[in-house]
Length: 100
Image 1 (tube, rainbow, N blue to C red):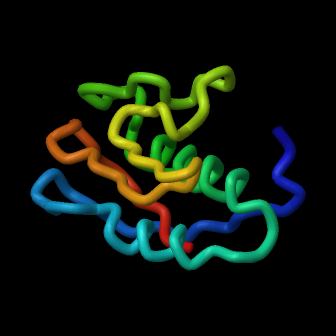
Image 2 (tube, one colour):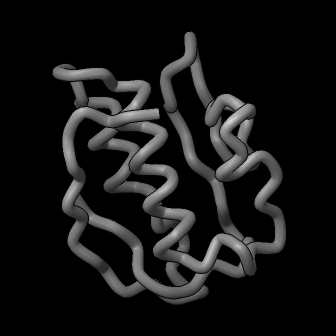
């Protein structure tokens, strides 16, 4: 799936103790209005997966599967196909959390 633009994330270090590493991301996604928000959401979630060693998460059900809508990925909550929540607490996340 082509994005039509390149995302250039910066990185923010996270640790297991960080209670909710998705707070800023939730705000950013909810404020997105231009372009194709579905593609941006998916690309942003993929960046989270890649930056936080998603292959080592306790539960990564659905993540990075091109046949699964990102609203069906573990820890993702959507309303009318728009991401409204991310809960990946206690999921063995480590590494770099992207900041846009």
